[in-house]
Image (tube, rainbow, N blue to C red; front, side):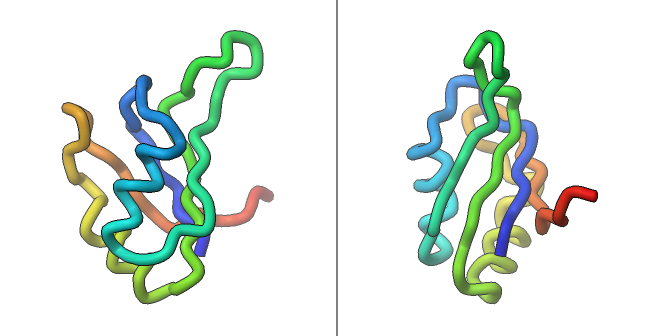
Length: 81
C-alpha cells in the first residue's frame, strides 16, 4: 500500500521516515519529496508497505501523532488523476 504522509519535520531524512513506519512492519520504500530548485524538503512524502494490514495499522497509529514537534497527517495515497 502506498501511504501519503504530510506535515513532516523539514529536517527529516528518508531513513528517519522509514524508521517511523518500520515499527509497524516491513517498509519497501520511504521517500520525502524535495523542491526541485532548492533541494529542501517540501514537508510531505510517501511510504510503501507490502502488507495492507500493517499499513492500515501504521496509518491509524501515526495519523495525528507527534514526531519532532510536528503533528503528522497520514492517509492512504491515491493515484494522481
